Image (cartoon, rainbow, N blue to C red):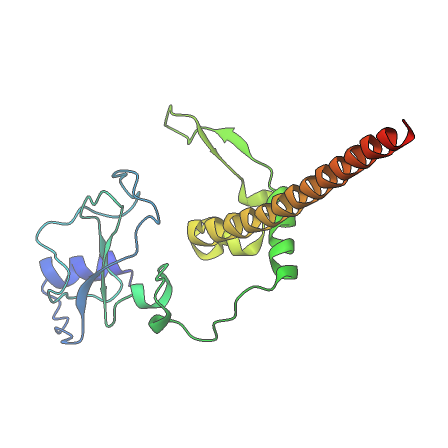
Length: 197
């Protein structure tokens, strides 16, 4: 039975689904960047549900109308522990910092992104982004939810910026060295010219 149907049966038809004491309401991750509330199709609005309160049917979700588009889900454990962009080291394992070669690869991947302007169906505002069908780098895509992984996408862009910064610094050093060489040559030419007089 689907969660909505099960909840309906439990609450209104008195079919006797027993209360599972391990189930509570938890908020989901929501948007990586809060951009204002958007209704989630197919998810009913919450009424009295709130994080931490007991809930009757595992997997049932409701929409509290949150500005970051977090939903409430009835679950045994907090779903945010499994996949939200949590940045503290204490929540992570197998941490390996990118090598210079790996950052270079990130920069190459960013350079291949096909950016597009588009409108969501049923909306007027023009947006900027990429299409999952264009096969962007895996780190920038949340395939399970058919959406952009903004945390991965931003990290990829940061790696590209780091590579560009290193290249700019190298070019600036090269320009300084060339200027110094030209100045030495100019001074040497002036000295040599004076010596001829």
